[in-house]
Each structure stands twice: as C-alpha cells, then as structure tokens.
Amino acid sequence: MTSTSLFLPVALPLLGALLVTALPRKMPILGALAALATSGSGLWVTTQTWLHGDLGLVLGGWGLPLGIGLAADGLSAALLAMSSLVGLGTSVYAIGYFAGSERCTHFWPLWFLLWASLNGVFLAADLFNLYVMLELLGLSAAALGALTGTREALAANLRYLLVGLLGSITYLLGVALLYTGYGTLDIGLLGARIQPTPLAATALVLMVAGLALKAALFPMHFWLPPAHANAPAPVSAALSALVVKTAFYLILRLWLDLFPPALTNAAAAFVLGTLGAGAVLWGSWRALRAERLKLLAAYSTVAQIGYLFLFFPLLQATPAGAARDDLIAACVLMAMTHSFAKAGFFLAAGLVQQKAGHDRIDELGGAAQSMPATTFSIALAGSALIGLPPSGSFIAKWVMMRGAFETGQWWWLIIIGAGTLLAAAYIFRVLSRAFGLEPTPQCFVTDARAEIPALLLALASVVLLGLAAGPIWSLLGFEGVQA
Amino acid sequence: MNAAFLYGSAGILLFALGLWSFLVHEPLLRKLIGFNIMGSGVFHLFIAVAHNGDGAAPDPVPHALVLTGIVVAVSATALALALNSRLEAAAAKASDAEAGSRGAPERAPSSAHHLRWPSQ
Image (cartoon, rainbow over all chains, first blue to last red):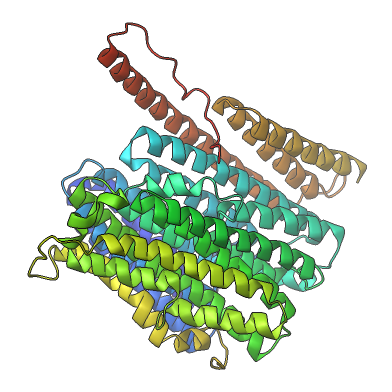
C-alpha cells in the first residue's frame, strides 16, 4: 500500500472528472467528494514519503522504459501537499462560487483534469510523461481560464494556450535531443549517464527556455496578467498558486537532479538570477500601478516567481552541505508560501468583486469593510507576500539574504530589499481603502462557506508555513535550519 | 547512420521553420500551422533516433512517444480553434451592439481574426 498508493493522486481526480461529467445533476456533491478523496490521497502520499523515504512505482506491469514510472521524493511530496491543500480550499470555495450557474457543469470536469495533471507533474519520473502532463495542464488551464466567456478572457486564454504550446514543444525538442544522446528518458538513469557535451547543453537551454516561458519568467511574463486577472476567482487562484509552480518545479528538478554541475554553471545561474531580479522589480512596480485588484494579484505573481529564480545563483555558488540544503528548503518554502497566500488572496478578491460588482481598487472601500473576514484574509495573505514575520516567506527571504552574504553576491540583497518595499507599498495601498468611514458590521464572518477557505489558506501561509516550517526540512531529508 | 542523420537534421530544420512562422505571423491559423510543423520536426527527430540500421527492428519507445505526441498536438490545435471561434462570436456580438447603438448599418471590422500579441 505504500508505493502502490502513488497512482491515487493522479487516478482519483481523473475518476472525479469522469463522474461529474456522467452525472451532472449530482455535480456539487460528487465534486466535493472527489476533491476530498484527491486531497486525502495527496496527503497520504506525502505522509508515506515522510515515513518511508523515496517511493517509486511502474504502472501497468510493463517494465521501464515502456511502463509509466511514478516517483515521490521530498521535493515532490512537499509540492503534492501544497496542491492537495490549496486544491481542497479552492474546491470548497468553488461550490459556493458557481452555485446555480451554468458554468458549474464546465468547471468541475476541467478542474479535476487540471488537478490530475498537476499531481502528475509532481509525481512523473520520466521526461516524456512530464511533457504529456504539462500539455494536459496547459489545455485544461486555458479552457478553465476562458470560462467567463468574455472577449478579454477568451483572447487572453487563447494567447495563454499558444504560449504554453510553444513552451512545451521547445521542452520536447530538448527531450528528443537527450534521448538521441543517452537513450533513456528516466530522470534517475539519465542523471547518471549524462555528460557535459554540447548536445546536453543545447537540451538544457531548450528545456529551461520552454519551461521559463510557461513559468512566466520576466520578460516572458506578458501572457500571465491578462489570463489570470480575467479568469473566475477559483480558477485565478489555481492558476496563480499552482499551475505556474509546476514549470518552476521542473526547472528546479532538472537543475538539481539531471544536468551535471559543469552545465548548471555560474553563467547559466546568473542569467536565471538576473531575469528573476527583473521579474521582482517589474512585477512589483506594475502591481503598484494596477487599477484592478485581480490585476494587482497577477502582477504580484510575476514578482514572486522572480524571487524563486534568485535562488539559482545562490545555489550554484554554495558548496554541497548544510548551507545549500537550507537554500533548497527555503526555495520550496517560498514557493509553498506564495501558493497558499496567493490562493487566499485571489479567493478573497473574488468575494470583494462579487460584493462590489467590480474590482477597481480605488472604489472598493465600502465592499471590503462590510466583509471583515475577507479583508482580514487579504491582509494576512498580503503580509506573506511582503515577507513579514512570522510568514513562511520571511524565513525564506532570511535564508536567501544570508546565502547572498555568504557567497558575496551582495547585489541580490538590493533586489530583495527593493522588491519587499514595493510589495509593502502595493499591499498597503489595497488595505488603506478598507478603513473608511462606513459602519462596520457586527459579525466577523458574513458568508462562512465562501470566506472560510480564503481565510484558512491565508492563515496557512502565515502560521502553518511560518511558525512550523521545520517539517519541510525533514521532509526534504535535511538537518534543521541553521539561522 | 547517414540516413538517420539526414532525417534528424531535416527535423531540426522543420522545427526552426515552424518556430519562425509561429513567431512572425499574426493570424491564428498560420501560428497553428507553424506549431504543427514544429511538432512534426520533433517527431522526425524521434523517428530518426528509432532507426537501428537497415534490417534491424527499430526502437519502439520513440514510436510510442510520437503517437502520443500526435494525439496531444491534435487536441491542442482543436482547443485553439474552438477558443478562436468563440472569440470571433464574442467580437461579432460586441461590434453588432456597437453598430446598433450608433445606428450604422455596416459591421465594424473584427479584430479577432488577427490575434495580437500584447504591446507591453
């Protein structure tokens, strides 16, 4: 039951998608049950990885290379836990959000396809299955994003689809080159065989470029803000919190486990770090200037993805050991914190938008004030986006800045400082509107089913990942943080 | 070896041509054809790798990958075309409403036929 349970986080949402399509009348109940089962299986796999170490499974009774291999190590397990919890919160919110709407029948099947492919990316053990999962993810994400049916949403998501296709076909060319050179696609086998040849270098460039396009790394982020800002709120939350993380996860995986250190050298790391720095500054600046709440959140995602890429030059310059382990764990912590915080932020923004009928920041005062729990969620998620203590991103930024000091790369400190100040400015710009002169209602929670998921997700980013970040280190198999 | 090398190089050339067409041309249909040519280029490369010399049985793994890849490319193309036809319908509706409010009989030219990349 330990290793065989690996297929459940992919199979259960697929089954859920089939059931909600076959029995549309029972949709919200079936959807909730399938979401619970998917989330439970993801957390089960995380617990098993925690208890027994790395897991592996080859499906269908075929041996490698024909069989489909699944594998879970600490990194996959941590991100699987993230997709399980954020996915559950988003599903509960979606029940209320789409209640009595035509779009409900389209949302649930696509959402479970998206969830299956997310978990599939985190668990796949070979490069080609990763490609299939990435494509499935791109197709379901673009279809979900276009659910509102407005002209802006359709145009933005058609562009998102095309950009995603370009990214994944470029990745696939890199995969084909690696197969030409080394005759295997299994990440473990390939990592042992690969040599720093021009062929492998070309494959690295193609794969990372394709994935960076899908991760919306500056300056390839242009497709993200309109696509994420025009989607329905639960979809925006899933896209911003989870979908862009899969491409980043793959780049990190290739960097750490596949390509030899002679290829993942200082120059390559510096390029990624510089693009990340550009993303932090440009994304934060555009978020500060955004007129709509959801556009602000989308540009903030561009900036937060940038922080994740700042880890590459630090990782490259740090020799293997406790300091490098801290950096890897901090990178995972940063990705997870952003995921919870941004999901909470988008869900809360969706409630404000429903209440006010629009999401123009300058005119939100009254609507935000009449929903104290939602405003509190935005404030909590905002503090995690800024990196205020005790949120998870505070610890991650702390470790990142220490790494920058220790490796003598002081220039990244300026970027982190400037990005944090800009983030504080755009978050407080939103919050300052919520304290107007209008009467505040007596009750804290006005609509429990809709407000609680957003609140819990935001709370997790601050409390769960901030005060209890230690388990991430042990899940990844490292000693403790040495701050 | 020589035939496989020629076939593989042709694949990379096709990928480059498709990429050029994808990036340079505005209309969606040309972008999609470009994307499919890029895909064919990658499939060429996989089939060239599968060749194990004349008379020998080819490696089955790349063949399986190409079949899967074709299915993915067809679905992606279909979804892009479906989204575009929705977009054109939404654009036509919007320009009809606009024309109706102005009282002008002719329809404004739809911009949806030429999907534009954002100008930021």
